[in-house]
Length: 335
Image 1: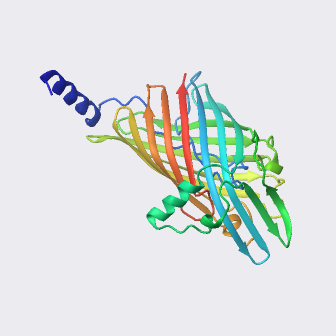
Image 2: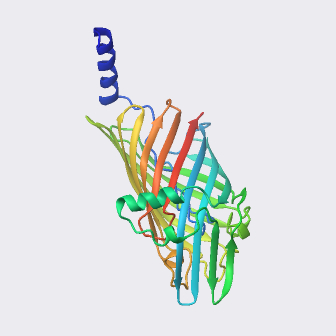
Image 3: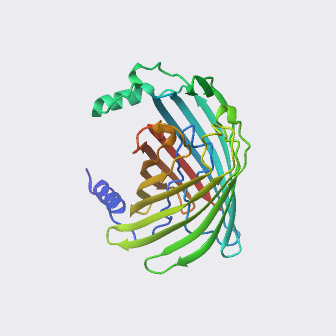
């Protein structure tokens, strides 16, 4: 290696490995939530940014979640099968109005089919010694979402489908913001979900849902880079919907806690825990009546100060209450 090449290589190493004084993008929570076919139909929100946009600031985000789930469970007079893949494409927008208020929207589109990840997940479970839970005995590439109670089928989806989901309107209000050495912020956020999706195909719930929550963050600059701690908690209220109406809960609590570390100016690594109480009652099945916790691991790549890409993988910590795996991508651009 000649002297010029050595200097170029050394410069790249320094740029990649030495923390920079200025970080051009915020470390934000993953825009993720439980993608179970029986949960994503409701208005369960991602906790979002604790910093509300200033006047005329705006942002568009394209979120893609690829979720693979398999459960085949029974208890007393109940049996549930959730076997398939869901692809959720969600376009979200936010606009700053005044100095403390923000308005936005979410437009989801869903695709459901048997998918292609079954073999990959089985090999992954075998490699690390995880239980297959019957997955290796089920037909490959099958789509079947079915719940039976007392011999009657209360919902059944067994054909590939696509369609619009339930549209949401969002809003945020800045309660506190500190731009000092250790910046922190707290925002009050809300979302209103409208029943625009087809509940027969589990594209929507048939209910109108209102969520209200607080989200906050605190950052620190150190010699090792920029650190961020973020979290939020709130409540979701739902009118009676079309999916298991006799068992649906009308109120659910939810929360999230996570942290991020940006060692270099274009990369942040993030870890996040999301949880919520059960969406259904009067069932002996974990899939319906248990609280849920998921973990999301990944990071953010910054293409510029205004354009970033989140890449994450989510797994169910409370088994059977969320998909086995969700691959999460969120491309964000601020105008």
